[in-house]
Amino acid sequence: MVKGGKTMREIKFRAWDKKNKYMSGEKNWYFGIENDGSIEIYNCFSNKNPTKKENIIIMQFTGLLDKNGKEIYEGDVIKHADPEMEDDGGQVVWEDAIAGFTYGGECSSFPEKSWRYEVIGNIYSNPELINTKS
Image 1 (spheres, rainbow, N blue to C red):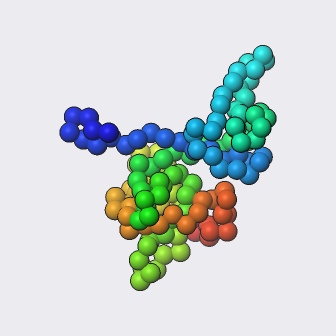
Image 2: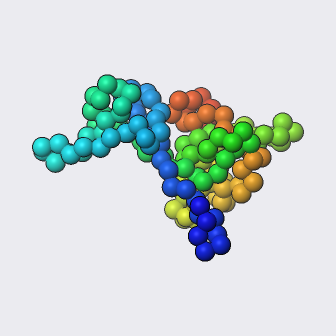
């Protein structure tokens, strides 16, 4: 998407269903307001059984793709694709202080050359990928 000569980042989300241990893209979730005013979230892959909003973790798309063309989301674990680089991998997180995504606990903006990195999992489906320093 281009506006005023600049490319704008596509705003997309995905969600982790903590109860059912399922990662789903934004098109698979439906929101409804119940009679008591609470919000229920329905996942079309769980037979439309309501999932309480407390059981959902929403993650935002960074606007970047890895070396394989895979979308990089908040909560993903990425590592440098060059085997020569010493890189155990790190979690992609949003940092309010810099108003941007960071990688592996570094206090710097997310690498612009995302094609040098590879998504190796995410912190919910693959918690073993995160070491204590991330």
